[in-house]
Each structure stands twice: as structure tokens, then as C-alpha cells.
Image 1 (cartoon, rainbow, N blue to C red):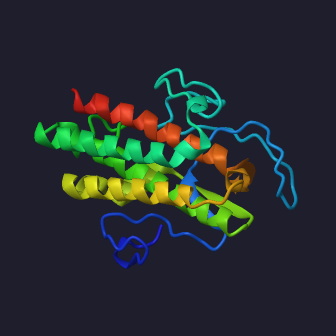
Image 2: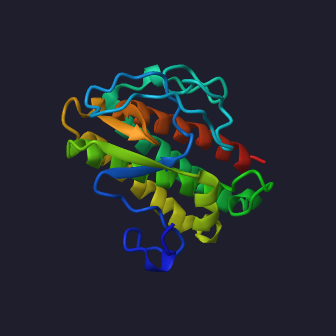
Image 3: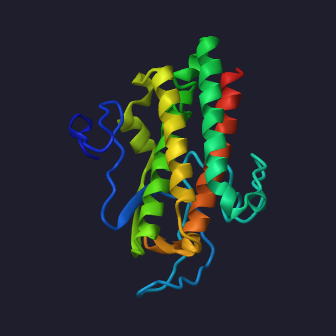
Amino acid sequence: MPDPERCERCRNTSRCAPPIRRSGAFLPTGAVPFGRIDPPNARSGKDRRPSGGYSRNRYGSGMQGVTEVCRECEFDPREVADDQLGPELWRLATGYEAVIADGSARNCPALSSRPSPETWSILEYTGHIEFIYDSVGQMCDIAAADELGAIDGVDPDEHVDNACFNDVGASEMSTRIRDAGERARAALEDLDRGALDWMLAFNGNPAPLRLLTVAMVHESHHHLRDITELAAR
């Protein structure tokens, strides 16, 4: 991870997302489940099935939330059309903003403090999703440039621990998640027709931009449910 005090990308000492590379982006390790995919633009190598999941992904494995309904949050990827991916990310971003506002107004302890060592705070969940949205924009940049993109896995717990999201005020985090949602929506809406079929490699496993984006919509939907439950305690 780069030093937050010297981060030229985010220009924010409380958060330092990994910078985009010419042909790469970053996503949480294990956040995207894969089936077997035939990559039309793959230059070499074979697709593999990664082992998977990470501690925050309590919604199971396989293709839940990507091609199947998630049994926990009930997100159905079949109900989100290609042209609704961007607007859906924006809608979910406003949901995070609303939960932060509600938690702040009620002085919710879980807003900026973990309810348990294994459970993120509301601000930490929101910061994680902000990072997800920025990753969507990076993936869109790769697809728009017709590059063979390589996406490096980032451990979400390590990233959240290093980012110190609990030190960010509720007002600033609300602004940041709203802006990140708008950036992700704009990036997806600016894509040319067919760009969602562009293949990227997540830790060496090929997958189309569409699948990766749907997985990020699912993660955003799922964690919005998580913070809504935290705020209600």
C-alpha cells in the first residue's frame, strides 16, 4: 500500500486506495466468484476456478448474487439490465449516504466503532464500497482502452485496517460515497456498446466486465443491508 501522506491519487490522508496501473485495477480478493468462462479476447493461458471467498463475504459461494439470487440479501442479478448497472450503483450509493445520516443523527455507536472485532463499522463498510466503486471506474477505463486488463486482488480487511475509515467524519464519508457512486455511474454510461463483454483477468482468472460489475453491485447491495442492520441496533 502506498503511504497515505504521499498519495497523489486520492489526495486524502485518511484513505489511500491502490493507484490504477496502465493495464490494471484492484478488487477485493475473493469478492468475485467465477464459473468457467471462455474469454474471447484472451491472448494466452487457460481460465481457472479460484478457491474463494473472504471473511466479509457471508453470502456464500458459487455464483450467488452474480447469476443466481443471493439467499441472504435476496439480490437478483437477473433483474439488473446492462443499462441499469450504473444507475443501480448510484442508487445504492445514496442508500449508504442515508444510513450514515440516520446513524449520525441517532449517535449510533456502530457508525464509527466496530460492534465486534470481526465486524466493520458503518463508515468502514462505506469506505470499502467507495473503493469498490472506484475499482469499477478503473475497469471501465481498461475496457474503453481495449487493453488486456489485469486486476490485482487486495485483501479487504487489510485495506480497511490501513485506510482508517473510522477517523473520517460522517459528513465527509457521505460526500465521498455519493461522489464515488456518481463516478461509477458515469464510467459505465460512457462505455461503448459491447464494452461490457470485454474480458479482464482477476488474479489470472478471466471474466467479462459485465460479470465483475454485477458482482460489485451485489456486494454493494449486500453490505447496504449489513449497515442498515447495524444502524437499527
